[in-house]
Image (cartoon, rainbow, N blue to C red; front, side, top):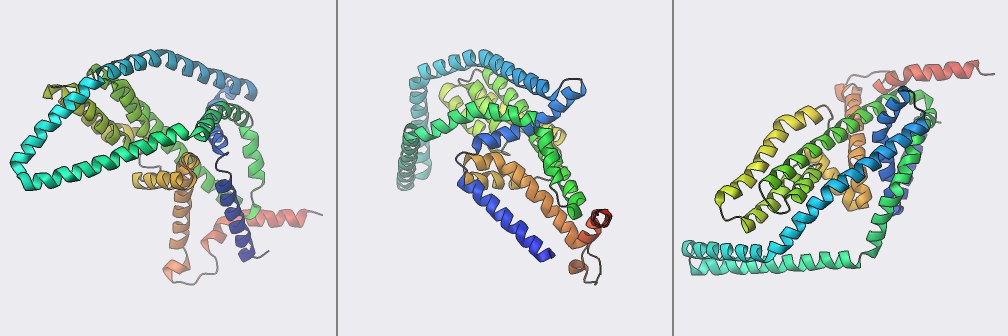
Length: 377
């Protein structure tokens, strides 16, 4: 088979694979989540195997440990969250009146500065935006109320994903070995090298970013709670979780916290403390957490991550969000590989060459495959 026909086969296979993912995106979510969880838990299972446990018992111990941590976290966090939510609901009318009074004072000040004509235009624009925002909130609530299918999907994700994770984690090494045996022999070393680079990129980014999210979520939750902000624990945890998307977590948490602080506090010093917590968190993240835990070696630029998450979510929904970072890592590694190939090729240098870089890379495996063919009867 010529190289052109081989390339055509691989391209057709890739198109069919993407089409199947798109058509089955509504049922693939727990399988994708289970595979991702098994991928990140595999090093822990390998370490337990080195300590003498079988693969089955390693998987059982990891599963029991995860369930124990989840139950303990819920026992500790749920009472605190319930108390903060109850306080917020009790004080919500007072907060609303406080915001209205402060908004009225601000409008009077703006009217004195801008004059009646300009202030009329500003008021009209604000009323228009408020109407659009109210309509959007109503549409979201309507979608949540009528989204029974989405609720069923969420329940299936919670119930089915742990089962899939258990079986995939138990059989992970066997699956990797089987797939490795399917690799085309002439290009096996090249594919293995790129897969190792992809594995390093995904593991470095996701594990590092997860550590950053955990550290930021803990800092924001504790800091806002100590500052006396209602829902401080919930807002802080949400900010840490959303920090997986660069800058989104900090911006979302800052806006929500400042809105609550303006409604709850009358002393500017208390409001400044809330703003200072996010300022300190951003400084620590940018100068210490991200460089130390993620580093610049993973090759994933924040803009590329944001684009991948938005594109994945737009094309495949929540499944696309789950697969966004792995797919972005694959595309980034392959792009850098082909760029190196291009820079070493006659297409870039303009100097004719009888041997292309890809042929040099695959030559040892190709020669071994030829030797094996000649030795076979």
